[in-house]
Image (cartoon, rainbow, N blue to C red):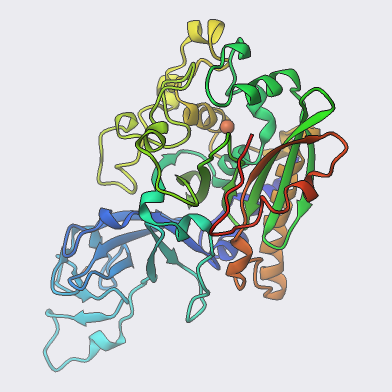
Length: 443
Ligand code: FES
Ligand SMILES: [Fe+2]
């Protein structure tokens, strides 16, 4: 559990909050490059509680401007994207991607008023098939994190995103909580699993209380979840939490693709889940690319990404094209017959099983009411790292972990089956290292 005070500190991300200030020290992905065209329509964006407008100018540069025009506050969403800038349609003020007011046609030509205006503008960079922005104070901004998914060629990668209507930490905690795999995502009869994960499903069914070991690292938290696999062997699944909002889980099978997620706070009560699968060494096959859409036993599809068929009709609101159909209002399409006979949850989509539980807690759960057990160790550590970093920045101006060390992000998740007495930390040391030519199999 957390005190109400720490819960507030952990979850609030608006300008001027300790956590909001801390998160603003990091680059964050929020857009796919194809979502904004040269001189095309601007797009509404919301990040860390700020309403913003994204557009691509005549030179192909991406701009991210404050929503409200510096003149009298009309929304730049309605702006004309023309000749290297976004022009407010109310009185014609025009801004370039750096927030300079480059034209002020309602003032006399001899006026230099426009040179005094600087509109909120955040730098954007296209890296790894995603557009990243930096909303912090440093000029120039720090380097982007060296995440493996951003290094591989486009053909090695499949990316998607979706909106989830609850606090970002509440959602991210689900990804570093390995114990729910024995329940939420499993089958009523685990032996019926005929997928490549069948052996892991059985191990999880037989040992439902993984033993957690958690290590603080430079970049975040290294999480080992060990389960008895019989014959004096243990199955260890290694997840990574990387400051401040990245997560990686271990791979499955012989020739694994890998997963990566980023839990981008839209505001205190909404999160943008950016995620992808990728293969370090080769292009994804069509089957792998479609894996996110292939029915897994007992689920209708998607391992964790939102597929086109699962999206609600697009709107022009922030991330309006990335809203799932399944939501609290329709109970995530839970089917009680399926729950009785086939899957533990009865919720058809894999990602919706997670989202359903996290949204059912309410937008921001009051963590002073929790009763945390031994399998919640990783969550406790990750919260502590976030809170400590926010306080250290607020009290001492300390640069948060990883901001100045992009190389710390060159790590991987892992999964191994090893003799029970062996150390998982040693056994997975190689597996957890990024290497451009090596990819260790999972289990
Ligand atoms: S409000 Fe934008 S130009 Fe007047
Ligand atoms: Fe899950």
